[in-house]
Length: 127
Image (cartoon, rainbow, N blue to C red; front, side):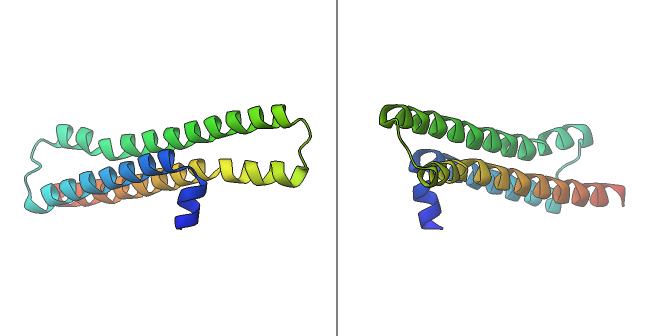
């Protein structure tokens, strides 16, 4: 996992990790609010609950941006070198996808968390 983090570029991977921590923290906050029964205004709470999805989507977009910046830098290096073997090119493309995969995975986690929190909230307010 540490190699994945370093290969993906410490700047973008650190930012993605921070966003994951924010998603978890916001989700824990909403879980506490639901369990304490303090979420009375249904429309407002459901709107606020969507922040989990929004932060997850921002994480995925950030991962895609990391890939695009990595590809731009790689293609600039290829342009200077002029002759690159297909194996080196494939390895570079594989590395450039790490941030996108990480961002997408975090987005899927945020969608799952949002779905479970929303389901839990709907069950607690309907009874």
